[in-house]
Image 1 (cartoon, one colour):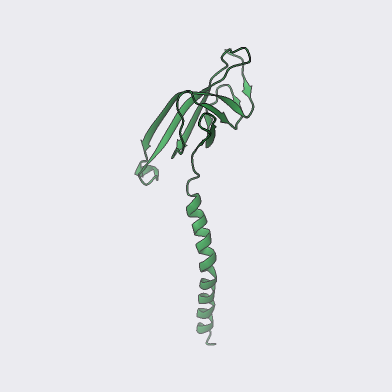
Image 2: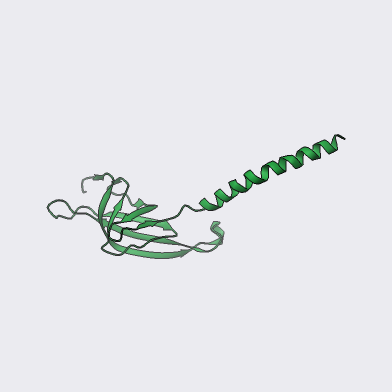
Length: 138
């Protein structure tokens, strides 16, 4: 068995064996239909002598934003140990200068809910207070 290896952040290398698949969300799984992407690749790294180091497997699940091609230089901000597949939310594509990311699901709808609640809550309190006053005969 190979020696365990630990690599600390940031990890830089070349994306190889890049594959993008689309999967359907099942209604039974609570996904409500639609689809999501699975982007898989390995990060090939080389030491100072040019010898290949252990490739690092990476997976991203969600709605992928950005571009990643086979051979692109990448930087990922995680630690890794032998045997792990890294689950990423974002990476920097050093070849294009762009980010490849998965937006946080429901982030904007949560903000909208909070804003609406802050605007509607005072009105709701006023209505309840008025109803209580009316029921007490004041």
